[in-house]
Length: 276
Image (tube, rainbow, N blue to C red):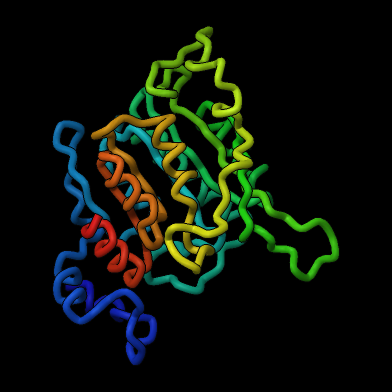
């Protein structure tokens, strides 16, 4: 059974999908891959983006094969591609995140790490989860002008989001050097640049366009890549949406693997990454 038999091409087939022409569909739809197409071993890795839930996609990757994971998990995940609109309970949501984080740890190399982007509402939950599965190194706070989710509450206007940086072990890569227990962080004299308060990173005037809600700032992703990866490293985005991380990863000479459950977004991401 092919993909078109499983689900419609567009959410609303009567309206054209922005960013995709008929020629694009003829080119990218036949090349669409699912988790079942992932056939990799530690000695036979390759790049690719797949129509798959992040948990299932990670479960198909070899153990100790990934250098860095950059994840922005959805706050309303579906259990499977076919379960769109089915909400999880809080307990199910916690378990779902625990499951994919456990798979993330399994796939990471000994020196690998993960940057997990999240809102303040779930930051405490992710700290707890990461602390039980990985080695939490720090929490980064950055200026996110799209973070205000309290429009109906007369209180402080939230303009901050968090990024948790965790590693598989305490022997990891940072700042193009190896960092271990008892070692000082590299370039420690540059305190401003190594600060975990990224006040200079904002999504105002995003290079990706006016619709900033679906995009993360290029400087944010670039800073993560600079700190925790080298060229030709394998970078995974389990929840890739429209492919921002994939685009920047390719521009920076890294290898990219991405997963998403939305076929429309995936096709757009395929085009954007292909044109990088």
